[in-house]
Length: 161
Image 1 (tube, rainbow, N blue to C red):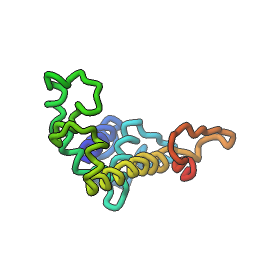
Image 2 (image 1 turned 90 degrees about the vertical axis):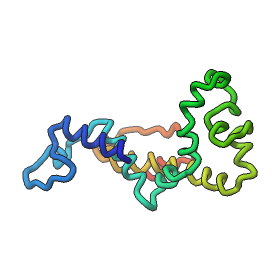
Image 3 (image 1 turned 90 degrees about the horizontal axis):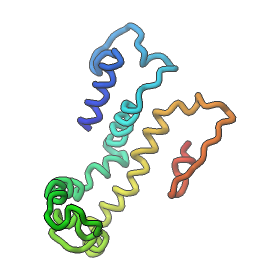
Image 4 (image 1 turned 135 degrees about the vertical axis):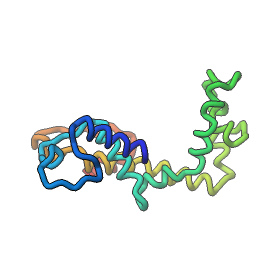
């Protein structure tokens, strides 16, 4: 979340916009309906929207295994035997959980972690879809514009759009 806020602050400063906390009466570029922020600002806003309590992104952020895996990433990439490994059982996940099982083999008997993982995976769609739906100026596209859904899911984004 701090990274998202920092990105918004940097983009605002680069665009000559006032700080996030100021209250001013004069019009700013952001007030103009034709204003399109940079891609970095889109990405930061998506993350911020996704991480609101009650939103799917919060489930991803609160998945406890991610923090454990992140904590051992440096150990994994410098591991004398695993640093160039292509094996699913020689990853940071194995180091974090002190196992030689693949992640899915390890999740099988760990029902709580398996449920948390399922919620986090399902939340990924909500993380990206809501931000893209909210941020992109869809109504500015010409009525004849063709959009193609090339995803591998169930069409949730196209349906929401």
